Amino acid sequence: MNSKKIKMTALAALLIVPGVAGTLKAAEKTTSKVVLHKVMHKLDEKPVIENTGDVLGKLPEGVTPYDKAKYGDVEFTLYDVTNKFEDLKEETVNNFLKAIPEDLSEYKKGLVDEAGLATFEDVVIKDESAKLGYKIYLVKETKSSGLVNEKAEPFILALPLYDTNGKDIKDETHIYPKNKVGSLNLELVKKSTDGTNLADAEFELYKGEPGTGTKVEDVVLKSNAEGKITIEDVAFGHYYLVETKAPEGHAIGKEALNDENNTLKFVVGEGDADVLNLTYENVKVPNNNSKKDITNLNKNNQPIYEFKDTIEYKVTLDVPAHIKDKTVGNIKYIGATKFTFEDTWNKDHLTNLRNVKLTLDGNEIPAEKYQVVSEDGKFSINLIQNDEMKDLLDTGKKLEITYSLDVKTENVKLVNEYKTVYANNPNKDFEHNGRKVAYPLKAEFVKQDNGVFGSGLLEDKLAGAEFVLIKKVDNKDTFLKEDHTWTENIEEAKKFVSGDGENGTTKGSFAIEGLEEETYYLREVKAPKGYRQLANDIELTVTGEINNEDETVVTKVNGSTVLAVNNDKLPNVPFTGNERLVIVSAIAGVAMISVMGVVVYKRRKESQ
Image (cartoon, rainbow, N blue to C red; front, side):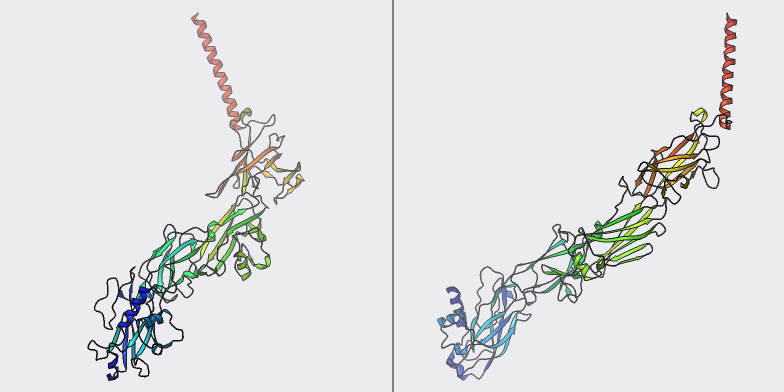
């Protein structure tokens, strides 16, 4: 304590000692009321208040009664130090205040009330055994909040005090200890669990204990572009924040709800910081980046299947942060309450689920740690069904679920759908639905003749032609069977017959379903009646053009959506109606030209 403060303290103390000690014996009063008027300021220079023991009519500029609601409790303690003093000289008081003993006798305690007053009733003012004959008290501020930057300095109070006439003891003694107060700003930074700052998160501020507090004003706190929310000059007390809106793609955690589980709480006034910093993360919903792939795509990397194929699927999920309870910084995060996967398919199209595996960041999770619940047309996994799975997932980032299904039909678009559900509070589930389609190829053909004299004009569509489909395996011919397997025995091959226009068929047309993007060969094993059988196999290049938006596929064979297969007529085969018409028309045309030639010649002769 510097000399200036010592002098001021001592002088202040001398102002509140008995005015006329000799009149104490004549007084009848033995107790008095002491009222401490707690005042506060934020001034750079400490204000001067003259304590006379009376109520002041006006406080200095910048000084106001203490605001307990805003700045918290302040407690004063009176210590009886009567026996510590032989006199009350300035030097004696200053020396005592510079080195206050620890073995003090506590006399009374009092808290400052809402009006800023700490009142001590029935304070003893007589001590006839004491050398000085009156009571001496040390008044000390023994409790205050962190918002109080400077406590009131301890001072000596000697009682009784007398009125100005020097005869009557004051019924009440009023003293004005001062506090310099500060303020606390709360700065909350809103982040995603992917590390980015989040704008447009909305919160409400409550005072009190989680779940039972009172909302502080009807104001929505919204994070700015930098993810920050600043609340200035927060009053003393216990608070918690309730998140009412999370940014798009993020979940409000259970720890941010308005109930007893809320952990976004803080206390103002227990520390001495000017700014309280909190960082709170929203879990990024894992469904946003989930995807499903077919891993055994064809040679052109397209999801096109052959009948009897096995399709291998892979679903990739982002593992959400805070799968299990954990504390990060000042906040305890409550783990996920739900994280499930479900896959469904048409059981008439796909069958024989097998090879279900879970892989976390490239490491396979032992099958005994999770349970696959399977039934016709679907299976599901509760990904956090036990603590072991929570512990594993809490350390990972990418989860892959792989499995296989067999194709049991042909020429059907195979739709495989999946659903993930995530939640980290009981009020909202985040559900994501996805699908993957595998497409069949259907090669279409039309059987026809070569037209008039092989010209390609007026082709007739031909019924009854029979074909087999060939695939080369190790340079050997294998033939497609009825069950869509392949055989080297042509007698076992399935026959594809061009239609006759009856029973829903189109004359000359036939199709082969369940093909891949592959090179095949078409062999005619029976020509239509009256037509020469094709001498050579026809090479077929089958391709598919997929439109993912409307989930359709167009099959092309050698670049055509319908490939024409032409035959020549055998010799001495009667002309068909169309051919007869062409021949008659041709003869008539020749005859007409001949007649016209004769007429022209005759006229020329006559003119000569």
